[in-house]
Amino acid sequence: MKLLKFIKDWILIFAIISGVAGYFAYVNIPCLDSTRKTALATVELIQPMLIFSMLFLTFCKINPKKLKLCEWHWWLLAFQSGIFLVLGAIVMTMPRNGMRIILEGAMICFICPVATAGAVVTKKLGGNAAHITTYTILINLVAATIIPAVIPFVHPQPAMSALGASALILGKVFPLLLFPLLLALLIRKALPRLHFTLSHYQGLAFYLWVVALTLATAVTTRFIVHSHVPLSVELGLVGVALVSCILQFMTGWKIGRIYGDKVTAGQSLGQKNTVLAIWIGYTFFTPITSVAGGFYSIFHNVINSYQLYMHANRNKHA
Image (cartoon, rainbow, N blue to C red; front, side, top):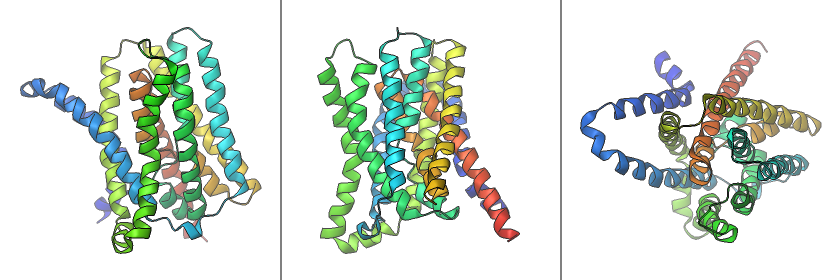
């Protein structure tokens, strides 16, 4: 029982380790060489489906009557979108070099929405699950709008106009982030029995997240292995992931403390849907930028594990 509890408590870290180990095991089996292109194409198809499914199951649990807007929501939205826009403006003035790739990685880390498991961790830490759920909807709306509007100018495609690239990205991002919410609300209204059943499968969303994280880590490992960028750039991506993770948690805590909702605001800004960040990195930027999302996943899980440990200790001695 203790072993099972240990595995469950650290399952996201195990997922990351499994992704790395699984990639190296796969590429070192000679008889599977002919399947590599098919495997990559399959993963690229499955990843968006997993992200959609996780968001859909998460939104199925939402009761619109319990959603509540808070003042700190607007500050966090302004912070995330503001940093993303400022970094984008800086990147647009730079030549195509290593620093540009590093800053693109930082952009991904800042605009990425809240993790689907954000409400669960927030509740365990004594925060307000309804408040973070409201913010999840808001930041998904903002991300679905701002990403297609900015990325074509930050990372232009030589064979495509900015307007064409925006339309292409909008077609991939908008349905992925907003259709799960619309579908969940539609089923809630039209098929209440099905909605009731789905709302009780939140554990499935978590395990879909584990699978998605394992695959995303494997893809990120592949990009690192096959990358021709200098080691300094890869380390720079790790560095911006760490800095942006700490900065967002601290900013969330500081803003949340002002409004008496420190835990919730901290998780809303710091805990990310890193599977989505990795997907955005290798789909719309230089693939190596997905390294930033991969390491952000490690850093925010370490912070969350520490918070949960300290919270359990405080309750034990209360």
